[in-house]
Image 1 (tube, rainbow, N blue to C red):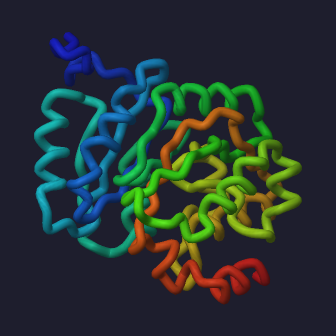
Image 2 (image 1 turned 90 degrees about the vertical axis):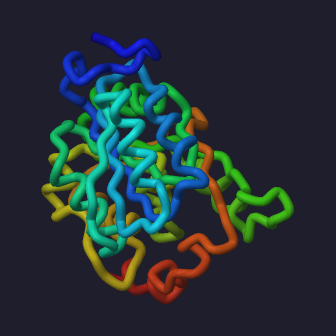
Length: 248
């Protein structure tokens, strides 16, 4: 039966259509809001797998305790090996025909996964669908480091043709806003570890293999930006790293 709060119990959870994978490391400050925003989804059967990538805070405890009240949520460990290993660990332990993405510091709008599944079901040539996003500054006093310009460009791309046309400008999809066909992901070898941004590398390989990328016109993710986020600090996100993966 369902729990008193409306969350599915262990006995009535449906087989997931979407397996949402959320890597996490020391994210307790924002993790509860991120998790609850996914669990608020009610229009499609999903599971949410939080992959603990070596946390030293109480984030894993929060997930474990919250999972007692919602059968769609579970915790697995990837032992601090990085985001690619965390993603691949989560994907290997799930069975939904679509793989949804979420990050531990973002906020998903309820209905995002249902709308994404509906789009993928209706467009068999599309392997990945994202959504438009809005910038959420971690500190209102921060500047967006040019991110708002990037988001405006990215949000303007909707069709597979537009994504393919502009794929060498920059990464055309916001990774945590996406839902991906599992069979297409398997076909191209999944996420790759390397000196490059794992999401951009995946988008380029999918298009090269003949798959479409698309975006819903609705804004369905608040994409949090902090001064220390990997986009600004990780050499895999540098201009040189992007040039290398584009050239390949």
